[in-house]
Length: 100
Image (cartoon, rainbow, N blue to C red):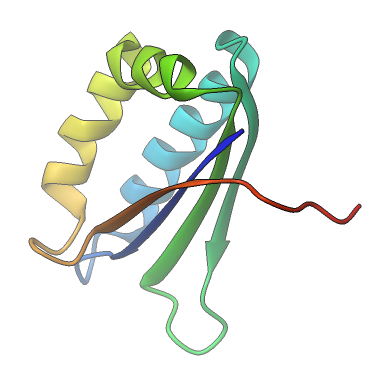
């Protein structure tokens, strides 16, 4: 399994359209992509413009399929409008342990 953790900040005044865009991307990633196992979007408790995504994919091919999906292109266009430039940090990693 491959994990993708994304950390970012939303521009002031852009919260509502950002939330609509990431909700659509997360939902379509999970429902339309067979390799997407999990897609969680979290909002910081003390800073409502700071978000972390935790995504799990079957393998690296599933990550590439995610990045090639039409809804991902829509998300990237929205992110370019709503995310603070330079604030997004992505971490791609191998999932070692899971405790359910």
